[in-house]
Image (tube, rainbow, N blue to C red):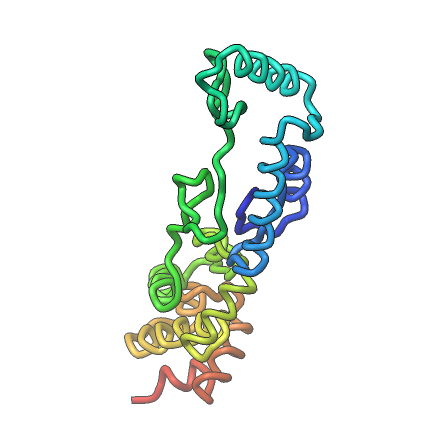
Length: 220
């Protein structure tokens, strides 16, 4: 089973090639996860039965060897022949998973260590404050924090009341106002705050401030 923050089809193709039982996209849907764990449990239980179908001939031979060893050792009777005795060097049996157990790294599944909720959005806002001059994109931050861009966008709007790009524009315009009051020229300010195109900067500034940046610069 693979838990991933990447929705690209190429990753799912690789998961299929490695014969995984499922590919879940973060954030995890608990009902979907529970259903997949049940299916995995049934598959593991099926592999543990001596009369089950074996896709791999080597595995079938190993099971046969275990069964013969079990019959040759009476002290093991009454116990599971496939877990009570294992030849030297044989791989350990697959862990039994329970849908009631927490999913942790100890179960062989990745443990989530990503920031969530307000902590996540606080870190995103801090990145914006530091990097607003750059070509900052929601997709980039989503990849850095291991979320899909659509999910991060929804969380960001829920916590701030603004879309990501709107919030970024507001931060840039506030910085532009400060620089204009310190005597910077309009084209210098535009480039400094992340708008390489001066005309585009004019439009954004007028949208949020109500007047052109040159006029704002002249105001006391």
